[in-house]
Length: 355
Image: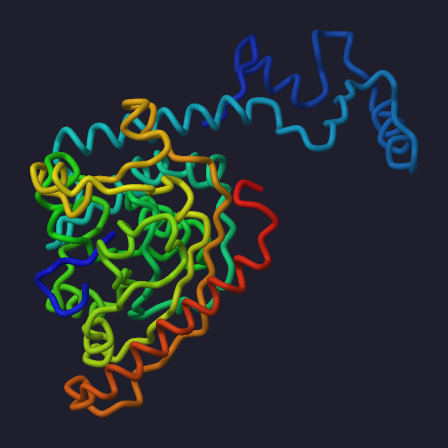
């Protein structure tokens, strides 16, 4: 997601026939009268069965379960649980028995619906590889700072899935989004439900102090809307507002580098006239859009890598450090250089754009 302009940083019961009395007779070893086994035969059978490798052929034998196969009825039981869970979910949605926080974040909807919708694209289409997930702390607040690219902000959504599905603690990423996101119908509601909030310092600090993992992409529209010829070249990181927020909250900054998003929509042109008419920061022209219409909006299936770098601690600085412009400049430059260096390293290591 891009930065906003409003802030400094851009019962199993068995069934048996007969009466209870006949059931008791059967459990004691007797069938119908005169047909039950004698005591000697019972003892003999038990003795033979106790010998290793011996089994009475007259006794019912269970077929061995093949390795790798689920127990009988397990698959049906799984589907029963899924259906029951889905019905319970729908009931809660209809009756309103679900929780959202003061930012509008709906954890249940995000986990069960939104993540499930994004996961096929994440796993099958872009085949995202995640490195350094251990650099995100298991608890407490953290600020993830990432590069931004791809013409459309799919990198922010894939980053959210990466943290949610790969972190051992199953942490959720709360992205700071531009004001344009919250001006678009439908998109506005979905963004709020997914945990995103307006990119302003006050909201970011509240989330961080609450112990959330917050994500920001300081390049903003300058990064996501840059031409294809400038791919993987970081744009300006603003005035370091994200550093000031991290210092005030006393949380570590985790640099993040994303490779693969730059090529999903190769932007070879920008129609500024259409952008002004539509109120967009840019109007992209790619090899497929707008020439192929809606089909041109399908992203190319590039191979992605997301790497989280070593966290940069901020808890050791005094309270007034958040107002030191030189310190903010130095930390901003350190974060930017670490992301850029990692981008170059990942580009050298990858075999192909698509594999």
